[in-house]
Length: 326
Image (cartoon, rainbow, N blue to C red; front, side, top):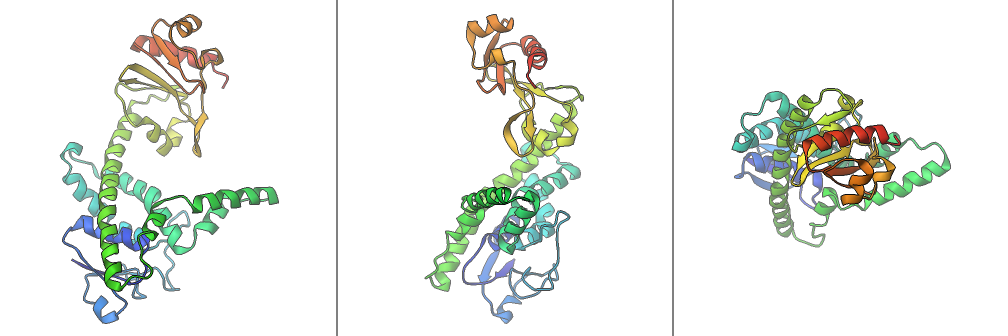
């Protein structure tokens, strides 16, 4: 497979698109050019050419390009190539990962959507110049004070070392085309390792999240018989867990209890704090205060704690909810 993209500086969107091609076929070759005749010799042309038939040409730069997601985020090259080839790639990677077993189509689709939301949307936003307007839209500041807070937070995130920043730092602005091609290929191969793990883990976590959903009975307590990515299951399926307050699950030292998050925007807001008297206590002092014989500790912030037995973690959960200040 031969893939053409533009020469000069490279960015996260065409690098990410190239990673997808590379993971589909490690023998993929890349050329970086703006010569139309050279481009047309390629099987796919990404982020250049002024065309977007979405079969061979994937350039989001033409003024006529108006392809948006349902949430209003415009596609750039990364998202376009993921939209076209993402499911094919996930199926390939799942088949190459025996531990996953046979992955149902609905799980792959859910993983596909998760990758688009968590990886491709941000990459597209940063490339198509929509990041500022989109964050302003969802923040919706109304007063001068809110606007000032928005600008401070937005400036902070502009300097966060996310993939677009890391890719930009791989460029040699004074380099020749050959030197830039070498940097480009090195970046694609390095990110291929990262993204391959992300894609496989997303499929794996999606499978495990389904186990969490099946284990939940709709009550105030999510009870798990083994350690699962329940926190992500809650965050990714918020409406399913609206009645739930805490989760209990086994860990290496017995059993753990933890409050569900109280907000989609923060991991550190508790939906259900522990009783105030338990916080920051452990050992015999905590056992005396709580009346639970194998309780081991409660975190000072009241978000998590532990006990040695299943019976005591169940008792702890009931007392936790009854004694919580929220």
